[in-house]
Length: 444
Image (cartoon, rainbow, N blue to C red):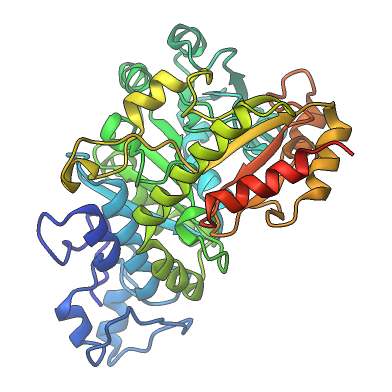
């Protein structure tokens, strides 16, 4: 296939809708003809490419080249997924967008942020971030950057307060960082307002939008500069592969940074830091995620519908103290979620645009930590597992698992109640999930 980099190949169908982009991506009839007419994208599982001549080898290995030479530098199957992810995240964003992929979601977060912290741009870098973050993200910022690299990590007291964010920004701030919605408390932030703060400061706003997926929220269209995803989650909902993605708008206009960073940040990452440090996604994993991502919109729609039904049921349950879900009026981010979270292209289905609030919710059962453990042990249909966004519904207690390191390191700042159960809704029938939760919440 063509191995162009920054701007990506054109979609197979001009002005295609979201679902068509998810199915076709950059794999069109012409590309299929190069693979004996195969309807599905080929899996290029080789680690390297041979060349017909020395001239061809030298051209492909040129320092600024973007062709397939060695899979750490790029691979045709990986590139197809890059084009698809960029097309979905950049849908209706009215800006040029490109993407680069990593081995995991955490790989995407470190790849997106680390180059911005170079001391070549100043002696004492700082970052401003929402504390409503995934546990491993908190550990990367606090331990790997703060303790090991002397980066000043400034956690915002109230992520919904734009003024609070503004107070933390100064001339050495390298980026703003937030999750929308956050894992696990599903809090949102005001992306347009934070984008304006970042623009004024000449720095990027980075948003982890894994829990929304581009089917419900596209931060680039709201003004954000860089988006990260764990493709291990809803994008790869079969649960067979891990992967991450960094998607960035072109022309970032970063204050005091080399032009190559601002022009095409994702392309810069692919051709430099990712190539050199090597945290690339395997072609096989990219191939399986390509298959999963085709049905992203329909799957996330179904999961979100069920999640709202389950959240409303739990909110009325006598055995539940509190429910966290942005689709509920009781949730602190509900108004922002109503404004920003929409099922993509739902207005084209013959009616009005429809809100969808995602597949993740959390709840606290009556009785505290002990009761939470007992509820987990009584689950029969829902799986006890530390992953989310899968076709199977899963549950965990983040304070004891996914966020334990962060909570242990700074118990006073942890936003995760120790008795909170995180529930990721799959595609099972909602009545079956409700029955399972009801029997698990019964007291002995």
